[in-house]
Amino acid sequence: MWGINRRRKGIDHTWAAMQTIRAARPDGAPIYVILDNLSARTNWRMKRWAAKNKVELCFTPTYASWANPIEAHFGPLRQFTLANSHHPNHTVQTRALHAYLRWRNMNARHPEVLAALRRERARIRSEKVVRWGGRPLPTVA
View 1 (cartoon, rainbow, N blue to C red):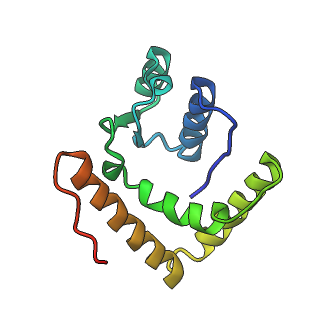
View 2 (view 1 turned 90 degrees about the horizontal axis):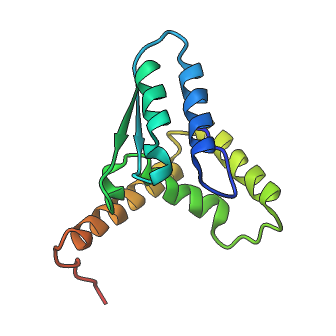
């Protein structure tokens, strides 16, 4: 896993990320990228570039974070870097995020990471029920 922390979302940042991902696989093999449906990601130039460079853009439906496998990794990321923190600025926050990603990549099978991923997947699955018209799961008091 790797990441870049930006102050805003936009096509220029998304496009730069796509080019970095493509450069990481110089063998020309097809790459499948799962994206939410933010309008900046559906730009016609981005789609044309992706088609030329064997990058398949796979968009998740609106309010379907449960359909994106990377979402389960954001819970532990928030838990280990952002929860109860008071980063004085973006630079310090970015350093904390990068430090976590380095640690996480070296310890991908660490019991704490695996447990946090399981909890986050369960939380995301429970949101799916509520978001798609199902009844909320009963809570134990």
